[in-house]
Length: 139
Image 1 (cartoon, rainbow, N blue to C red):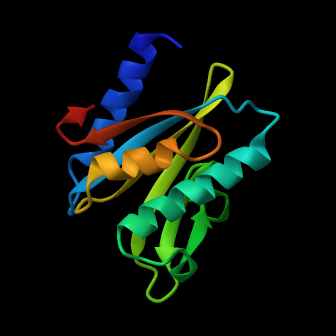
Image 2 (cartoon, rainbow, N blue to C red; image 1 turned 120 degrees about the horizontal axis):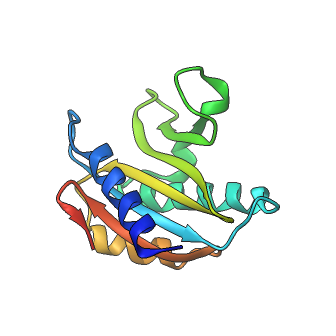
Image 3 (cartoon, helix red, strand yellow; image 1 turned 45 degrees about the vertical axis):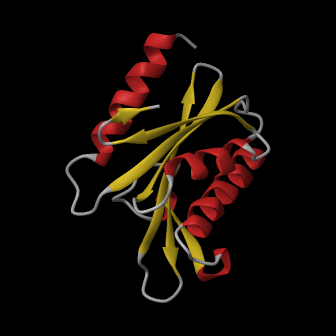
């Protein structure tokens, strides 16, 4: 993957974070998972959501995943982590096939230490590298 293609993805992710009603943080999780490893991608998505929930002070067992496949307002491979009580937003993720591998684009309400979340995401099986994103840019 070229640096230019990654920089474009990071710029597009910054734009996702900007105009909202709440301040968001985000991350791009680069993987080496290909189209034959969708079950591993699904597991990585769930684990990444659990990391975000934990850092937001929410127990993973108090969330569920609402998938784009279930709703015409969402794209395929778009997922939201919502609270069981109240359907409140915890995180959102888009799974993107780029060239031959998947990347995850995650975002969640800011208020946490972005570097700590990025470090926890980097420790997940399947995460090759993680880039933290704010509305001001990327690290």
